[in-house]
Image 1 (cartoon, rainbow, N blue to C red):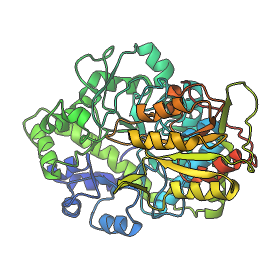
Image 2: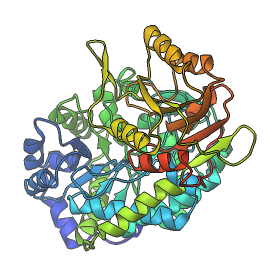
Image 3: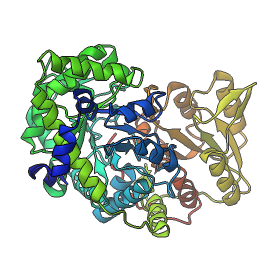
Image 4: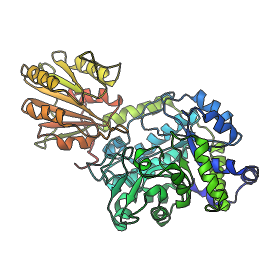
Length: 520
């Protein structure tokens, strides 16, 4: 896909550029959000080049917004769980690492892209190419492909090819990678030390392979500062760190991560960030959603007018952006075989199920005739007048499946931050059972800083350690690092697609064949 940048701009690209005012040219560099109150006005004025749409935004809404613009828009989503208005939901990226099959990785991305394009989406802020090298890292969740650079690189090339073959522009993220730091960049800047050779060999290997084998056309940079390369400025403002892109042969489009994240907002004002991102070498800016788009636009326009950013640099970026938009408009929309895609995604949940036993033996199914206690731990629970409640969520679906397969057993529920009284009550209840089996959610949430099990829960697990037969890690596999020694662990990589597969493994109807894609 990046081959289009080596071609001469078409007549349409040239004429479109020539017809634009300075504000319209700068607007092409700014990606806003569908949720902004002013988004329709910004699009109609040509003061944004596209927008990010959350996965619940309907295709009708996207089509309406696109109709307001005289120039094609980039419409991006994360596509990490599925488009709620689309036909499908799909497994997380880490399932690909557990399966370790490049054809599956290609099809996973290809079907995602077809489903997204049917809703009017033409870009994806993904795949996540952070290599999960550090189990303490907030990047270590179900979003990365693997903790092994070689495996992540092979799968990255397949995923990028799948997206691009279907006509979706990927912005692989978060360059150069969050896999070493332990900060949540929604809250604080990611800072870590790694020399350039180590970065090239490990962190950047997925990018290098995706560029070489799949002609990766887009990269999103992260709010990261690597002291070995630039001890003063973070990636959005660092031309030194942006030079890494040239060193690995990248010729596509670059965009910042969201400038609304507090990890960067606490350090720099928007009037520095917006023009600074362009001065450092970025092509586009993912706007601060708390700043009026017109004000962010004005910060860059002023910098052009006072000569700090040459107009030629703006126009060079606009030409490349328009070339990509022209290409995306011309890619035919292929038909999505929904049944085939759904079958693939369902089989992925089964093939990725991963088991570890302390004795190294095969996973031992739970006898359905036993009277066991299953404990479901999830942040989906809320405290309402002293009672735990949940909407019709994956938790309820899991409970229903467990009751179906283990009719003699009981089920208890616990929040991820249990109170002392909740812990005491559950421990007392567990005394009446021969075995306790725990299914505990461990999902990274933006601005929460949480990706691992917390002390109140871990204390309870240690207390009933001799009772526990199986512990199911539902989500971030690195959360298992804090658990005490237990007979066997079962890893599911998040989302309702794993519910049935999880229960089938517990009941002995499915053999877990996945391999753990990280170390902890």
